[in-house]
Image 1 (cartoon, rainbow, N blue to C red):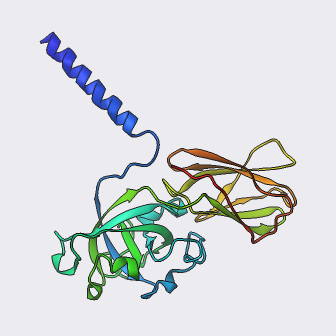
Image 2: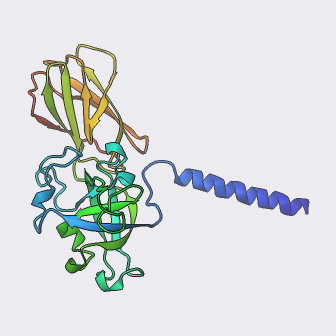
Image 3: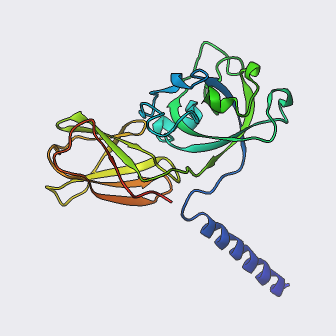
Length: 260
């Protein structure tokens, strides 16, 4: 009996260790979860431009038409901006409205607000606590039949795949730098961000202003800038002197570093 208990404890410890090791590093796809999905933005997805994540023109930023607005339950006050989700129409719940055997991967680029004037199961699709994707029409039509309008889906978070490194767009004015971070691979979303001017040796914390936009209230005009970025997988990259002295508001600076 004692030998059996020792073997069982050893096996359990091995399982726990394997699970711990598997959880370290890049985001692993989670299990499938249930939600619903609608679409917006027109057949060319032009109506999805802008949005609550602050990405602006999704075409020029590289997000294209594979994007979606997330309901309150998923949006997390903008902390989910940039995350990627694999979505399939749930044929077990609505076989007549699903295209079989296909999935589509989207990036979270917008917020789908609640509509408290409509019930959650009939129009108020983005009301808490419902997980819901209001997808760009071209992405939605990859998995659903157009006339359905609303379809049940299954989804999972997956790592984002991007070409090239992170990009930083600086807007604002003196004493207020508003930095948009785009083209983020792996987790896709940013947890913490810091800035250091070339006249300083100290990192200064930045705050999430809205969506994927982070701000600093320090006077950094005319200085070279470095950024230290931590994603929601707790991976950190340092972008040393990514912004040269003499930068102007409205400029974008591309790096060669990327999360993996």
